[in-house]
Each structure stands twice: as structure tokens, then as C-alpha cells.
Length: 110
Image 1 (cartoon, helix red, strand yellow):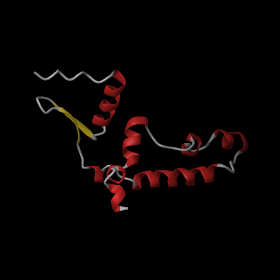
Image 2 (image 1 turned 120 degrees about the vertical axis):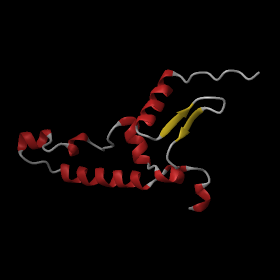
Image 3 (image 1 turned 90 degrees about the vertical axis):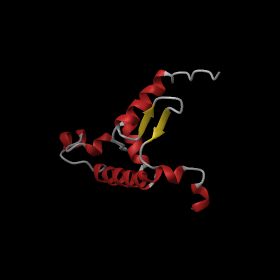
Image 4 (image 1 turned 30 degrees about the horizontal axis):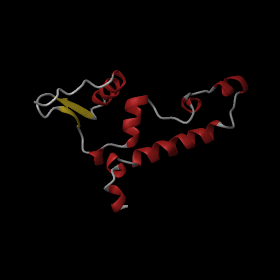
């Protein structure tokens, strides 16, 4: 008789819950049950997974504010335009990578 599978640790359950809420995984009950990816890996960007787990990906929250604290005090911020550009580039890079790209089989295709 096969051993009953153990429940995942609490932190893992929270991770799976966040991924399920984002529509990235689904759980199945029964003999062949478990947690399975919902969309195919080629349709899921790394950005989508990261944001499902941690919220918006940003280099510095200052760049997401209409007026950062420096702008509030001085009326301008020389750093903000660069941060906004870097945030955009980081998000684009993460959005361009799919889970399929990260699979070991993808190394042979690159």
C-alpha cells in the first residue's frame, strides 16, 4: 500500500495559493492528484510568476509614484527618469522570458 502524500509545508501552501489565485496552477484531487500548471509554460512569463508571488516588480518604488519624496521637497528629481527607464527595461526583460525558456530542454533550442 502506498504511503499517503504529506501536506506541503505552510510556506509552500501559501506560494501555491498565490499561484492558483493568479491562474497559474490548479490542484487536482484523487489518485493522480497534485498541483499542475494551468497554462502551458510557453504562455507564462517570468514577470507574471514573480508578480503573482511578490507583487509589482520594480527597481525602486520611487519611480512608481507620481511625485517621489525628492520631487515633493525640491520640485524635481534627476534620478527618477533613469529609474523609470530601468524599471521598464527590467519588466520588459522579465516579460520576454517564459517558463518554457527556463526549462532544461530550452537550452538546446537557444
